[in-house]
Each structure stands twice: as C-alpha cells, then as structure tokens.
Image (cartoon, rainbow, N blue to C red):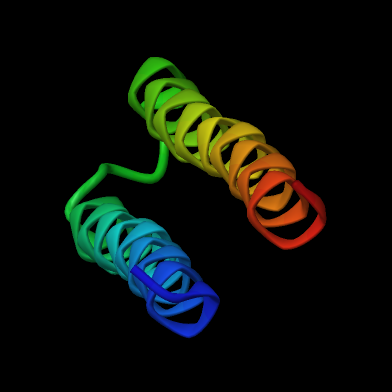
Length: 74
C-alpha cells in the first residue's frame, strides 16, 4: 500500500470523526429546543454530552495526527 492510500484512509477517518461530531451537535441542538426553560438539570446534562463529544473528538484528532506522522516519517 502506497503512502497516498494510507493518507487517504486517515483522511476518511478524519471526515468520519468530524461527521460524527457534527451529527451529535445537531441532534443535541434539536433536543435542546424541547427542554423547558426552567429545567436546569436537563440543560446541564445536554451541555455535558456536547462537551464529552467535543473533547473525545479532540483526542481522536490528536491520535490521527500521530498516525499521520508515523506514516509519513517512518
């Protein structure tokens, strides 16, 4: 497998990661409209789900960066 194909696979993985984050964010935004204005617990739970997804994707992005460095330089 050539370097170009390996990097293409990493690019597809990156797009899947970003697509997952976008899907989850849109889903939570739609759910947020249904939350009653005074329901603080539900709002905090929604915020925590979004933050967990964002930080998990950041870690996934860092791992993809390490994978790209390994593919290019080794």
